[in-house]
Each structure stands twice: as C-alpha cells, then as structure tokens.
Length: 260
Image (cartoon, rainbow, N blue to C red; front, side, top):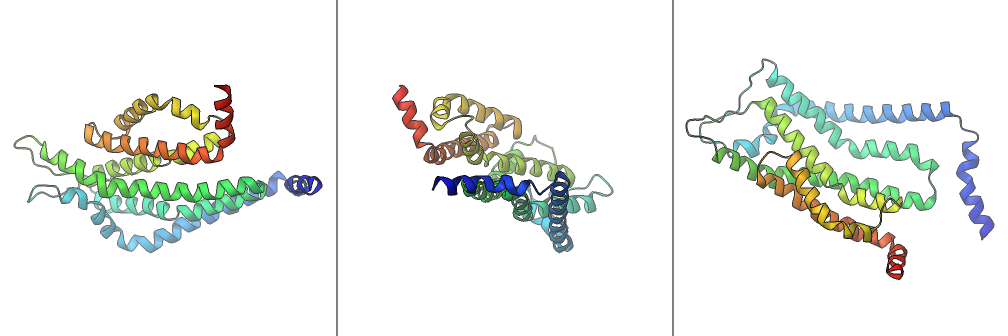
C-alpha cells in the first residue's frame, strides 16, 4: 500500500520531467485562445439582441421612474456603445464556465487526486455563487434602490438618467455583489491552505460584521438600504463558509478544544 501511494504521488513529478517550460507556455496560450474564442462565439450570438438586452437591463430603473420620464444619451455614440459594451460583458459572464473549464484543464494535470476533489467543486461553486450575486442584485436590490433614489428627488428636478452612466452604475453593483457572494469559496480556500481556521474566524465575527458594512459602504451607493442589502448577505455567506470549512477541518477543531 505504501509503495502504491508513493508511486501515485510521484506520478505528476515524473511526467513533468518530459515537459519543458516552453510546452507549458504553449498549453497556456492554447487554453487562453480557446477561452477568448468561447467569449467571441457567445458575443456573436448575442450582438443582434444588444438593444433588447439593454432594454431588459434598464427595466428596474424604468419601472420606478415618474410617468413621462425616460433615459437619455448625452454622448453621440452612446446609443450604440452602451448596448455593445453590455453585450461584451454579458458574453464574458455567460462564457465563464467554459473559461473556468480551460483553466481547470491547464492546472488539473499537476494536481493530486485529493486536490482535484476540492478544486473542481470550488470552481463550479464559485461560478454559481457569482451568478447568484448578479441575480440577487438585479431582482432584489435594483428595484429597492431605484425606487428610493427616484422618491427622494428634489421638487422640480426631472429624472433623466444617461444610458452610459446607468450601465457603469449597474455593472459596478454586479461586480460588487458577485464578488461578495464568493465569500464561502474564499473561506474554504483560506482554511484549506492553512491561512486560518473555522474557530479562528468565529472569534473574529465582530470584526467581520464591521468590515461587511464598511465594504458595503465603499462598493454601493451612499444610502443605508443598498449598503445593508450587500452587508447582510455577506454576513450570511460568511457563516455558510465557516460551516462548510469546518467539515474539512474537524481535526483542527478537536485540537483547538484540547488546547483550551
């Protein structure tokens, strides 16, 4: 059994002897080209519907604007560039599973079996969590914050949002909520690599609460509603990450109990 285990562990090392750095660079280039090609294919499928996609993205704001109000384009090229930019970003989002697959295909040969069992679910989970963060922002956060912004407009002010400014605003929130929903993956990776432990993170819970609201303040508009709608999911996902990470670190928790 020991001999078989040693042979299994040494297998990646022996295979690497016949592979040069130049071969790795060629493989990396191939994977990057495949990832870019995947984005281009998705973009070509979506570019015809660019105007419809932007119209769908603008619905949360249009539904809360006063009757008779509409969005405007202050730049000559904005009616074309804004939907075009949105389509590019959406193509990258939709092609993300294929991009991650190319990354996985590049690094998988150098991983041991136990590492593959952890990394593969994490890559899938991180993609689903990022999509969940974007969906939460669009369906739950946008209607609330846009209704708030339009309701507090001063008397005599006509609400007419520029389409490019609106796109930059929503993309910033998409990235903020998508990244915030990656907290469980970050916690699992930190615990797996030994940077921290679930028990140590539990002890830092008060600091995490403060940090979540600070991050919410920095990444969202200056209103308590959107800040709270980012901070609260971050705290919930922090607890989920601790629970999942503790399943992989039962032995560490037992050692901490013995030390106490």
